[in-house]
Length: 367
Image 1 (cartoon, helix red, strand yellow):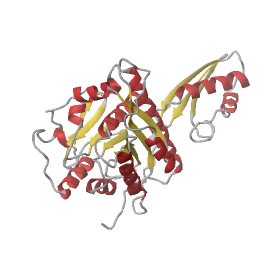
Image 2 (cartoon, helix red, strand yellow):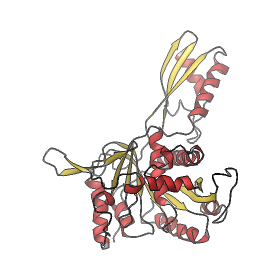
Image 3 (cartoon, helix red, strand yellow):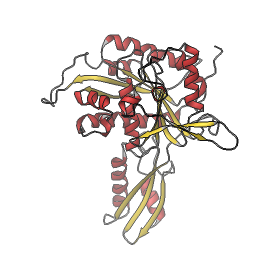
Image 4 (tube, rainbow, N blue to C red):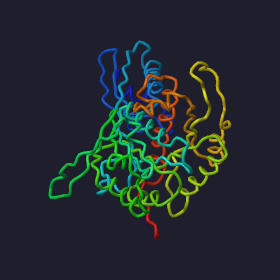
């Protein structure tokens, strides 16, 4: 058995999303052959790749079918998270590979829950992840992660530069929220420019360091904060959150329209339907479609958007958010599986966006 034979065999293994074989994509590294045993490393586009088992099986079968049916095949995985930033190395978050904004047309659809568990699912897959709570008027991160009352520290950036805010860390991800800087008993009564200034500070004055993904929990609607973020950082793409009901779907269409405008033109990574159905704990096989059925799925089809998944309405999700232990780090395997599937689909959609769409850049608008 030779390295050339192994590479030739692996040319028959397709990367399922990018549509080319893993050798052409330069994903095969470190081939080691010892008699009848061969090991090699496949470099994935994201640590959170949901296709690992399928790729491992395809690689093993290719070697055994095309070289030797007695071969002992060991497939290792590593990841070099894909990025498509046009301004890589710029002063704003220079070491953050992908910036993902989670948006909704209206409040109350569970956007913060989706953001928190998406970030945690990425981290469970081995990615370096941050979560920015950009909902200035209704921050949720301190409660959802059990860090109420905690305050971030400051650090000296050195070289005579200004001090930087050090985000809190919880469950392996970095957190920043206005709720960590102000007393939760006080309302944030700010005009638009002040809220926008806070978002700029979260982007420029927080030491995010190196991240594969920064998930940003956006406020509902389509306003100042959204435009400020798009003009400050190169957003990789947006995830739209909706529920199946008509009112939520109507507002989700406005969010989709905003990011599709010619002067903004930020890719939509996909749409996720939250509160898709209710499943009581005592009847885990039953589904009750309280808010309607498949509204988000149909909306994704209407706009030709990737449909990222359906998240059920179950008590454990609410309890996890209120207790500071989100469902992704709880013992609720059924609900966690739905979140993991959604996160896997999102990671795949981001990788495809990075491979096929123009580089991300800061939006330049006249006003």
